[in-house]
Image (cartoon, rainbow, N blue to C red):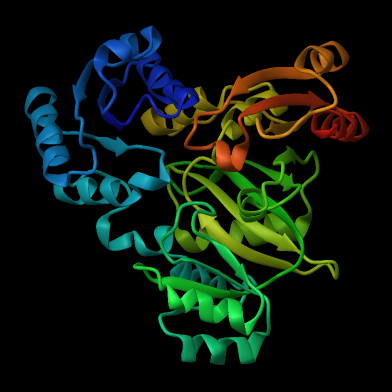
Length: 386
């Protein structure tokens, strides 16, 4: 099997995907904008060949790189980046080289929030009312139906980038005084807690791994209001969340892919689908899969790709939590004090790449425990401000 991994070096923990492929005998090839001598030793050893491409957003250059690797190694069996930014590029390459996976004509429901909503509805899952709006009169009509506040975000956006909350007519007018250059979707504001349904499907579309996470705040609030981010895995997944997640994955006919679905849980108990990210959850969440279950999800994914097998058993023995810190805040407890107090719980401490820091923080602690009280105490201690 010939597998091209697009940007295999980014982010750092995703190098494990290429490494695990290589370990089970897959011919693993890389295309990326990181000079070869700056790749980690492990990644260098995993890649049969690496094609340095300074301008990864130039489709013709990527086309030539894939053509070269095809000429040298034969038909390419998979092309993947695991990165939302490259979803369209991945799909175009698969289409032009007839590589299995999501093709260009199928990318809409994976990329456009408006099409996600239609798919949620077809799956019988409630979703926030919303529509793509390009001028203020239509926006006012939408507000008349749903009321303020509303959420405005790029229809084809990544995470919470360029997302804003509009709470009045003057704010709406200000938004359209400086109209965006890309289509925006407007949604009714849903007040509630955020939960995810995360996992992996095999080549037949069967879910072979799944879990769920609860979030302290949404990414939009974390970025726009400079809040802390924390989230943690659930040991017991509510039945309605699992059922809704499974219906959505079935509607997508998702095969051999990770997924990260986001939902609101309102104070009345309603479950409302927010959006679908059909790639691994961001940050260190794949590592959290491992810590919570004592498995190696990177190896299991590689086995799904190469052999359509998933052999790990998992029981969500631990609650695993991500707790971010920001450089612009003054904390009561130093890193040394936290490490001394929580060393039995801490499984990883890391710096965050600049591109992710506005959402994830500048540094993070990942902890695991079988006690939710211990997790809550750790979150309070790590985030306590002077």
